[in-house]
Length: 189
Ligand SMILES: CC(C)(COP(=O)(O)OP(=O)(O)OC[C@H]1O[C@@H](n2cnc3c(N)ncnc32)[C@H](O)[C@@H]1OP(=O)(O)O)[C@@H](O)C(=O)NCCC(=O)NCCS
Image (cartoon, rainbow, N blue to C red; front, side):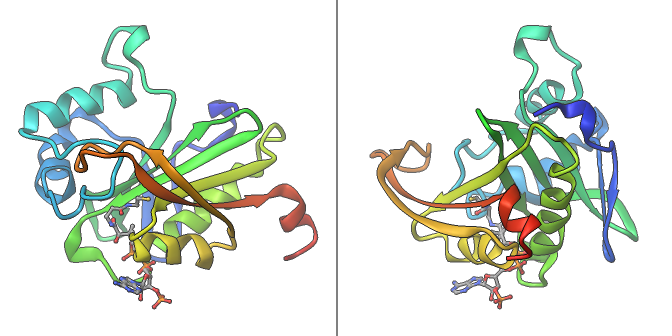
């Protein structure tokens, strides 16, 4: 996966996906990163303060030493009429493509917004000829996220038992795996 293949900004009917800036820290913290309910099933811990959020943003904006830079290509999710981020979505390189990850603040849940964002990001991933597979996983109980993956055309590949550590649990958790491959798109499946 080559980040240069991805546009800095993507637009959908209701959303603008754009690069993060450090000044997004307060909105990111207030709207989702500091909310334990939203981060319950994530691979990262709830941010304890806006400083933690700022430190995280520095790793995706490049305002940090090169060795701390995130490998994930991340977009801030914003509504077309609100420039502040209400969530984020990103692609992390894998051996044959990219892994999709996302989060959205609670007030925006249940309106199809993440499905809209994820479909746009998956579509754009195929512009990179080195991407053959886009995969994602969710905690087995994260029904909303699993549904987003299905609605984006990802196929269920099974449960990997005890496969992931998530900071909100003190034991490894079962993960439901989903993926879409370039062949699915070419054959219209
Ligand atoms: C997962 C998440 C991104 C979904 O975002 P969203 O914009 O609300 O998703 P959408 O509205 O596009 O779709 C959600 C689907 O899940 C369904 N859903 C939500 N909660 C559900 C539940 N408890 N049981 C069954 N279905 C549920 C919705 O009905 C919808 O499906 P439908 O369109 O067929 O009705 C959002 O809930 C979130 O950010 N959660 C916290 C972070 C997270 O879990 N990230 C993913 C980590 S893998």
